[in-house]
Amino acid sequence: MLSRKSKIFLAGHRGMVGSSIYKKLKKNGYSNLLTADKKKLNLLNQINVYKYLKKKKPDLVIIAAAKVGGIIANYKYKDKFLFENLQIQNNLIHGSYLAKIKNLIFLGSSCIYPKNCKQPMKEKYLLSGKLEETNDAYAIAKIAGIHMCANYSKSYNLNYKSLMPPNMYGPGDNYNPQNSHFYPALIKKITLAKKKNKKHIVLWGTGKAKRELMFVEDFADALIYFMNKKIKEPFLNIGTGKSYSIKWFAKFLMKKIGIKLKIKYDKKKPDGMPKKCLDISLARKYGWSPKSDFDKGFDITFKDFQKNN
Image 1 (tube, one colour):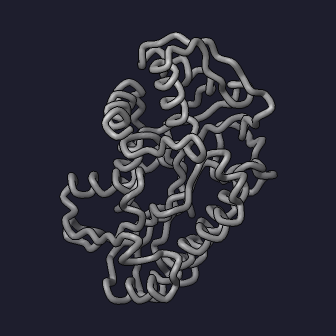
Image 2 (tube, rainbow, N blue to C red):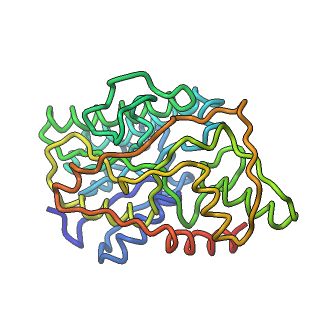
Image 3 (tube, rainbow, N blue to C red):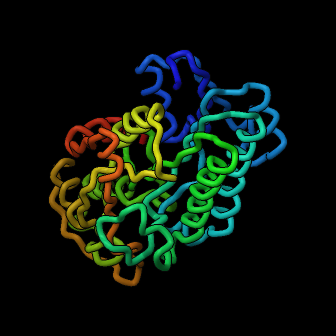
């Protein structure tokens, strides 16, 4: 069992998810936290990662580091999404094993499930069909990470587990139109339309694709909850268990930002996965229950967006 004094290495502490996990760990009294920025430790460098883990020997490694992006970046840079994600997670997972680190948590994504996956998506549906073409490279890397953790745990009696979140949003999100996810992209698009007195916005695809969205701080709470749980399954879905259409999210954001715009659709652009909603019944069996308050999550996120954009 981990204590408040356990040494925890958090890889990817500067990203939206990593920084939220870092703050929550601190808030929960975990004081012995290790972090290293890119200048200090390049996670793509195998030898340096191995040396770092052997020297520091943390009690737990959390892998929140990844190359991430929206639909354009995922489709355009498949080579980088495959190589960098595989390299980062291989270095950290195998390096942890070599350093005799017993506990590790790998963060995946709901995009691991097949394109036309039965809804809501249960853990057992993994690899039951073809992946969505726009983000298959990222998904393949994440699937490899899940299997690596599961097999290392089995072969070497380790506690390497994986958590699969849905789309996340929150403070520190990426609002770059070229590589952001749909929710921050919508916030930016609607805010700009309001600023420029536009009458409409253009959404990719049909607006009918459904997405599950989780506030990053709620996910950080879930991760801390499962840190000290011994789980039987190789991985668990962690989400809200609810999904809404892109059109619904656009209308929700317009209402919150205080503008009414006509929505036009660029149907030449892809929708991505038609539906994405996680079945969270396995996680619930361990006594965890999801939080979902879009109003509160939006208010915290929008305040951060206005301050930094």
